[in-house]
Image (cartoon, rainbow, N blue to C red):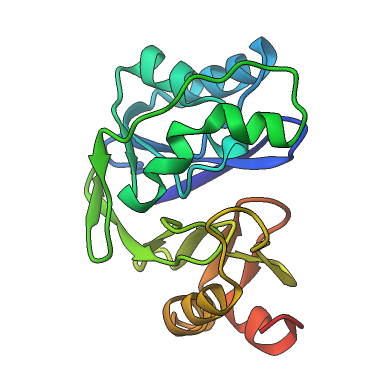
Length: 212
């Protein structure tokens, strides 16, 4: 499975496109586009590679990771897939925007297809395994591909850091447990693709992440 990262919005969110090169089926994960140029960058890449998006997935529903949900859903005809424990965050995107004093209007986003621990998201001839990693948000998930040894961690685990837990629904002890039990137990050279910042590996985070 191939993967392409884009950095979108003033929040610096990593939006990922993952695809099966045998079928060109693709998943768009955490679309964070906030303007026409960012939408065109995503669309141009998809068109250039001849990809066929079949999934729209949010690792969690904090507003910065959902900015492009409506666009992707309408452009590619995709339902939103996420964990139901974050449904409340999707419903109160405007309150999230107000908290950050953003001068924007954001309608609610609703989960159309629920993802939970143990689910396998089929992308062409390959799959992404869903791991529940709550703590940053109640419904945070990670997406693991064992064949090509990578995991998309959302805002649970970063290179040299972890997700913040001071937002509504955050729980520090729960996040540490999620990282310890679900992520650090993956094979050591699994590539970590976080929601913000550069990639890492599981073994690097085991050895040097000061928060865990």
